[in-house]
Image (cartoon, rainbow over all chains, first blue to last red; front, side, top):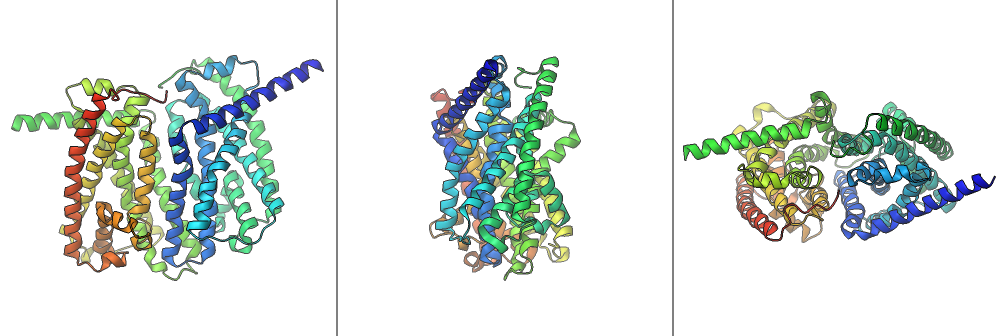
Length: 274
Length: 284
């Protein structure tokens, strides 16, 4: 019993410690704050103005703003979670993670919690631009429901990020290219700037594979009601997001162990510049 | 003179060959090509998704083809112009080979020009694919018989020259500012997307930004391409100009930026060397 308690305390501390590092690290480099907060917002503005140029109903602009805000989280999942172990490898720090007595899942959980917190702070800029500069409006909504859907979306997204980080552990430069390649294609398949329903069957398949697709659809339904042109009822989407979170967490745990052994076996765990 | 030109050609070819080896050696050619065209293609599909979503409700849906065309040619700006900033970051930060390139007889300017040819080829491939998607999937077509080929060719060349030379300026800034280089590259890509009227007429920009957009050659490049291929431009403000005026403005802004960029690159490179920043890594 005592040993279990000790392990829990150790992993809890590791998680809190990694969360702290993520938060402090993210505010230490002002240029990165601008990059994470401002650039996705500028891209979002271009899509909103396209709707305006086409003379589309104003609700589509709100739809694009919500998608643009969520794109910030996806960028963080890819580069801050998925590719993190690649960065650590390049900096020569990865081996420290593996000699530490705590679970790697605790470290990744800390990274995820820190990532959600810092990214949420950065989305404030996107929200401000969307509402105050672009003049986007939402329907009256239930804050409790919004919080529930948001938490479920983040849990699913970051659990996916944990799985990706274990996959990227094995790879070197491919991790960089894979992260790059998973931006716009995932934006498209997730319907980040248009209702997922517009993609028909492709959209339904994407919703079954990508938590971002379900998350953005559910959040839009909470904030825009019928104007969101939702794919499935919010309750169903929230439950599916919870399922995604569990599946990806389990997958991450197994993938991390398997790929750690594989990369040790192949001698690639600490190999840089490959 | 002839020897000098031959020598330049040989160095350029070597840099282009090296660029291809560096960019593609992590994957087999098929995977690499898929990767190279995936992002621009996906952006085109995002636009398609937006169009499908509002097709029945948009008051000016016919203007979509203008923005789709602008987005297709903006690939040159993203891949060549911004890509040249990334070249410096990769060479210095990731491979730590910038100092060797700098010390080699090839010369940085020729090296960057050679590396950019690979990016130019990939950008051309991506643009063609995006145009094909538009042609077959979205019905964005034009009358081949009505196309004025000579002006179109001139406009295409001017746009590519502008992308290449502004790329030198971006590379120079990346040499001088190692810590901010990645952010500048990312920021420039998205800022030009917003500023040059790629996805909407520049008339929707606030005053001040409109004037800034009019200084950039790419704004005129997209408008000229729209007029030459689809028959009319997107901006009411530029719409008052005749085709000849538009071409002249494109020519003047491109030539001006070419000279400024060439001078700027050399000045920035010199300054970076003076400050000891050519090999200053900040990431790994």
